[in-house]
Each structure stands twice: as structure tokens, then as C-alpha cells.
Image (cartoon, rainbow over all chains, first blue to last red; front, side, top):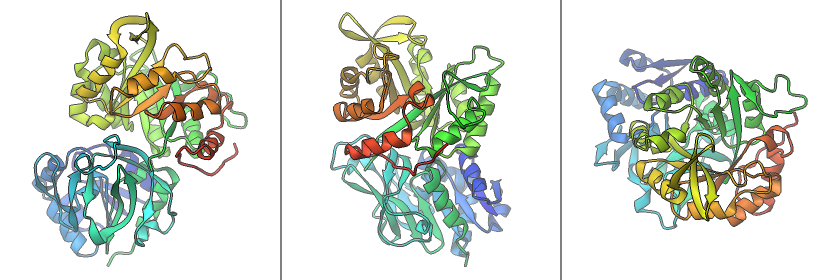
Length: 206
Length: 258
């Protein structure tokens, strides 16, 4: 059973559909008690970092998620959900994230060294940096679907696969013990995305 | 490296795909879910669904189609047709669309782009424009190309971007249906004026037209077509291989026979 956190941002059809397609039971929930007993957590998210972080805080879900992560429960943040795993973001001001991974979320446009379009939208190929349980069914060079304007700068040791865009290293998959994140949308990345979700579903908790 | 995208477009009326679908070996080819699933495995990078339903009552049927497609097809979905106000965006997104395209309603009320972008983010809002040459200028047309406006296409593209559109679908009325290739001149004129992604539409007649598109219109991020894919004149897998061999970055997929 995978618990998908519903905190009122964005549409959860696709992620729930994709997890169901790989044979997982899914529970969509915004209830703290559910999260505190969850075996596996997916943190989705679209929109602005500050709004999402505020909603997670107001509902008490942020503390619940952090406490589960610290207990070794496998956790996957997707897109903005991945960005929320980091310490802080500079999207419209400065906002604190969950702090489960070291690094900052910064605007791509300030750091680009080549002229490219922002948002980084479309299919980009993955380069492997270091092994992660999430990459066990996919290959280097596989394409995944991104839509974002901010990226995890200095993800450091959690960086396990990235894409290149505008001269930047864009962390695509981050991974540290039981905490995982995908900047791209695995639920929109066809077969490759489903394989990544499958790999996550097979991660054993501590 | 970011791949160039290939996008089939499906017109849906009363819950069925219309317009020249000729897949041999695929049962119930005018079922949008069946067709979407087929395109998904044959290498389409994204799907566009146009709701060409005339009546308000049948809109629910389209939303139902969208929900069923979104449950089974895990690539980005764009929805267009009949989008008039912010709540139409909301409805489409809630039912599984990733992006929503707006055309005539934005001509009437450009603030719709801004409102939708503010509510749902720039990446959700696609400005679709039908453009035709009039006296040597690129002119925007409304209502599916029927109504001439006095809007200059390049100005409109810039304004759309400023209002918050995250992408532009540029459909050339001059090349649409002619099958002589995409409108490279028009694409270059518009793409050089904006920095958001441009989807080229109108004129694709064969695989080579897509090679020409991406080589000669470097500002085009994607190529969209309908009938040549539906009729199987162009197989998306084969097209991707040709683009790859021509040095154009694409997401290659395994071949599937139908």
C-alpha cells in the first residue's frame, strides 16, 4: 500500500493511475493519522513552493512526513514534491522545505549558461551519477518528462541521475537512504516512468 | 538533451474519435482510449484531444473520455476545444489534462490567459493560434480559421507570452491540409519573437516534412499532425528513427506492431 499525500495542490489522477497500473494499492489521504502509519509515501505537488510548504505546515502533514522519513519509511517526492524534500527554496522569496535532503531550490534562469527556454518542458535523457534503487529497471539515456523552472542546486551526494539543460546539471533523481525524489514526472514518462515507480514500490523500509 | 516532440492530435465528438482513423488490426479504433493507448506505445510524446462537441450536454462525455485516457495513458495530455473560461481549465485539469489550449476565447478575452496562468501555472496554458497570410502579414483568425481578425500573429504571440501562456501551438491555415510540409517561414517569424516553446501544426504530409521542420525551423519544439498518423501514412516509430538518423534529438521507443 502506497499513501499518496493529498494536501490540496494539483490533480492526483495520473500519479494514482500510474501506481495502480503497476499493481499497487493506493490510498489518497490528507489525514495525519494515515500518514503516521503509512508504509510508503508519495509526495506529489505542482504550483509554487511557498504555497505548498505553507499548506503542509498548516495541516500538520509536514511534521508527520518528516517523522515517517526519519523512521525509515520509503518516500518519493515528485516534481514540486521532490523540491520540498530539500532545505530551502528561493522561489518568490525564501521558504523552508522538509530538510530531508541537503541543497537549495533555485531558479534555473539565473544559472543558465546557454540560451534555452524556461520552463524546462519536455522529454530529456537521464545521465546516471550514482546507483539508486530507483534506477534498477531503467537505462542511462532513457527519456523522462520534465516541466519546471526551478531546480535542485548543489544536491550533492543525493544526486543519482540528471539531465543536461542550458549548460546546467538538472537533478532528475535524488536518493538518500529511504528518501527519493524525481524532478520529472514519472507518471507522465511512459514505460520508463512506470519502471521507476515499480522500483520505488519494491524498496524495503527500515 | 531535450527531445523534439511528436504529437498526434485527436478530434473527439460524442465520446468518439472522428476524422479518418484507419488502423488495421486495431478493434474499435474510434475509441479514444484504445487509440491513445496505441499512440502511447508507438512513441507519441504527447497527445492532444480536441473536443469538437457542439452541445453543452455532451461536454460531460468528453470529460469522461479524458478521465479514462488519463487512467491508462502515462504521457502528457493536452486538451482543447470549448475552453471559454477559467472553470473550463479547471474541469479539464481535474479530469486528467496536463495542459489546456485556448484559441478563440483568448482572442475575445486575452485576460483569460492571465487568469488561467495565475490559477494553474504558465505550464498549463497553451495559446493555440490559427494564422494566415493577408497582404503579406501574418494575421490571426478566430473560430477555427473562419473569422479574420485584425490581430498581427507576431504581436499576438508576444502578448500571449507576456500574459502567461507557457506554450504556443502555431497552426498555419496556408499550409493546413495541403500536405506540402510545415510553414517554415511562419514558424521562424513567430518563434524568433518569443521564448516559450512552439508546436508546429499544419502541413505535414510525410516523414521527411518533420526532418525539414526541425532542421529549418530550429525554434519549433514539436510537430503536431492528425490525419497522416491516423491513416498510418506515417508511423511514429519509423518517423522517430528517421529523425534520429538525421541527427535530431528524439525519444526513441521500441517498435510495436499493431
